[in-house]
Image (cartoon, rainbow, N blue to C red):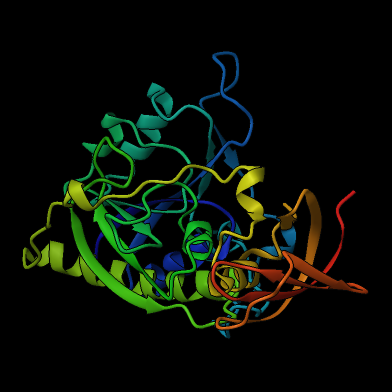
Length: 310
């Protein structure tokens, strides 16, 4: 089994691949989480994290679905005796030394928000493996699930690739397609991608160790890249297809940033998507009855519960 340093965050897209590595018997020697505050030269390069008392001695929770209660990535590490650090400066000699001291065969990454410097990329003999929730080279960037929903896609996937100095641009090891059913929420899709990503990560490590897997370079001509969504990206307008708007609303409704419908100089906060008719039309740009709105889209009609956006 491989010696691993794991880079991630607290949510399920980091936690589930870590649990998959541990279930497969890999020797995870260190968890690296990002410091949320901006780094500066006056603060330590990294800080060792102590597990919360409430997590010690508690068994890891089963994978029971996207809405099951879940331990954090840090809690899972604590339950398995894995030390953890919060890294502020990845290039600092102290951080590099802490990772190198683990003698990693591989660095595994899932939902870590910062680019790994070349000094880290060169460190493990098997390379740095990233789990990315899209079918690369499509939807590169920091928030691919948002853009999957924004585009109204009925399919996405998960990719395990070797990291290079670019962003999500390294050669592909394994991919798996995942259907996006109508009405799917972000939590449900993230869970499906995380479970598949953990399985592929375990398979990729085994194949790299055996020398039976040849990385495939990404075709840059097929690449798409999206940045962090801005407030205007959460706006539904009449030029969207009703099907696309409905899928988008179902997917990202529970985010902190509100969804807005902007039409004919008026805006409404979307409270719940109620449905759509891809073949219907309206004589007017929209119809409002109480808190229910019908929006004329291109094509189709979106039906939603709304409130006036003040």
